[in-house]
Length: 264
Image (cartoon, rainbow, N blue to C red; front, side, top):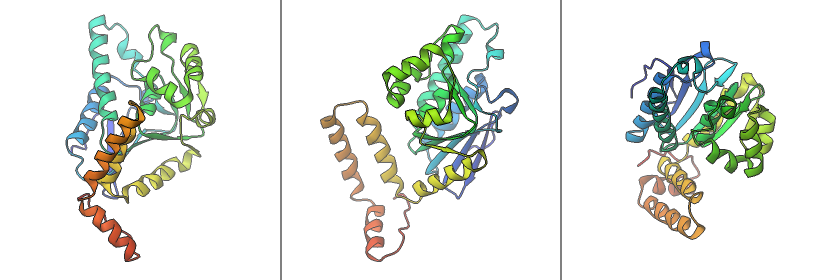
């Protein structure tokens, strides 16, 4: 796994937890084209080979911003063709995160505006610090959410609330994000990463194939009717029956010890 990137800092914790940190604090971690290309590479790499990674934590450098969205200074003077190229890169990065086979948790450490807010919604779930702020500001710039914002926001907060958020472009607080269902937990800034790591460690202790297949099944469930979703669930379930981890889980329970899951 490549660990050296220009716009991201990667760190492996406890062998199985990968921290992916957006690393442009001088511009509040705003996304330029290079950052989009590197996001795509990092998460497509995990899709091709997880290399023992069981959980990803996505966060931003510093205590002011998770991600301020697209880098508008880079976008100034772009031709329409250049804009479309950049957005195509972003679109591929969105799908790379969503297709990541292992859980991705966002630790939202500050402002998450525009594409930054959309990034926080494209992960599996998010924790936020008390100083985090969220907004989908695209309509104030003559565009609209284009990184699944109009898809994910209604699922998280409901259609009517999503329309208000998107149509006004107004920011809202971490507490409001929690109350509306956008984030799972609000933490003090100094404890955000440790609390996120605690949850990541709890996930990483479980059977990796079970987690990955459950993730896929949940994702399918939101796209199809229940009968079809259940058929996918059963297919995923039955693929786990013959795994070594299934045998280890039952054996460990009966021997009154913690299981040692290997992903096999």
